[in-house]
Length: 378
Image 1 (cartoon, rainbow, N blue to C red):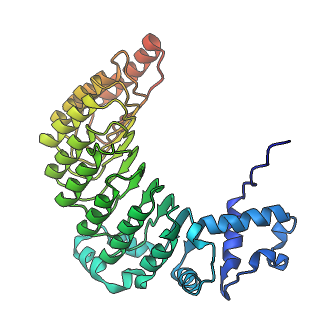
Image 2 (cartoon, rainbow, N blue to C red):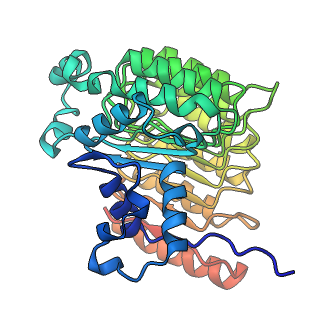
């Protein structure tokens, strides 16, 4: 007997088309999958098998764009209109505000009013939706990127993490969360199987880095994070030192992005160097815009010389200067190094160092047979 065929892979535009008619201007339509008249001419040839797969996909992957659509979805869930909704495995919300509002987030004088304003908490819809989606405990991906979340929503997210043992990916980037809200979610992740955590462009603080350190250094069970993105969180050098020392204890982490936080040339830079020397799994490091000076760059270079796993290092827009850049280029040329990409753009380097970078690239290619890309523009 031939093995059963896998369900067809649906193009994104068909997914969007199905979701549009499921939660369109007229509200939820529980029989939309059988209404062939709803299919536009572009999808007129879609077979019944595709429609069946689309219906299953809608129930396992929920993609919502706009508050009006979210309100229709929550109303349908509350009235029992979506009987299969508890089987949702992936929830993605796209409730971004205007670009002008997003630009305001970078200004300290408007950040607190945004965080404390009731109009940004999505009217309590997200906690209601998360409570229903979590009933079956099968959620794998939770993506709320760009959605303004208050402390109540963070409690709902923490409860969702606790109730869904299969949760693998959590994206909360750009959600204007307070440090307390982020800390609540991070502490709920301790002991989970989440492998991807994105909390960049939120307001982080020392308590948040303590929570991240607890998560990264947990041993029973061991932390499973492979990707951690905590960029542009306003973390000071003390918080970064705590975080980086904990990263060195996590044996699974492969990608670390902490750009836009303070590292400098002191204890945090030393912690970064020690972390690189200890790590055997890290492959990508992003520390752009971290105020790393010549001494800090030399410390990073020392760590890279002792690390055989890192393949990509992004240190653009720092203060390395010629001395720091030369040290990092020396680390690039170490035999046995895994480095393939090194970004030193806008680090105040001279033309002499730029020429030396080209010589190092040629030397590594000739002597080690390793192709490397180096950026040292400015």
